[in-house]
Length: 330
Image (cartoon, rainbow, N blue to C red; front, side):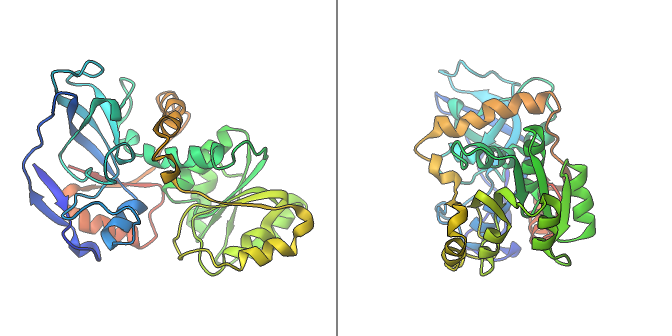
């Protein structure tokens, strides 16, 4: 089979298009032929060596794939040849293996898809899984009416906007250009602020009548992370779930203390919290699959790029210009 493999970390040039033996399913496994493969930030972190849970080298990157079962082990009863499925590397031993024409996985670790679901759209489900857990698990019972979504035009950001709007929340998006702001409003955001040119704090105050936002979701981190506590409403919650600009500067503690009387909350969130709670992680998919089948969530695909051009796909992703999801097609 053809696959993308890395033997060292670095830029897109470390992605090599190679021939590898097609895996054969064991007694409890299925062989999935890929239809579409998602490209996302975890893949970039693996490629650059920045991921805290690196797979052993040489490695096949990729955490998400849609496809069909083409072979099954003798003990498999839950799936049959031809069934459409979604594979998430979050259910596998390592975060990887999806940048390939074929993948073997235990039958219980893959997600059966409803018949008729668009397999390109299904390949975007990892973003929605993260977004669902940010809205429902990271909040851990917190009641909120408004959400501020950083990087709202990206894959997870788009999923957050759609799911929060579906839940009846007021959604304020943050994006880096007029085109991206228009895009987030098309996805359901009530407002979008261009954080490159606008005064974010002043615009949030105007939108909310000075109250602020109940839930702030930030994948950026970095030296300016403490600004989020200026945007939060009393009893508000700020969640950091990514390191696009590095670890959150510790000054956030001072920002919280300055507003001691407003009782603000803060959480670092990672999907790895569910590594030992797989059923809780999978609960998101139980909710998401019917929404996808019913058209209530609508993954936006920015481009479809051949698997052999994975380097070009990563170079494009690295520009920050992708709106929605980027797919590889084997």
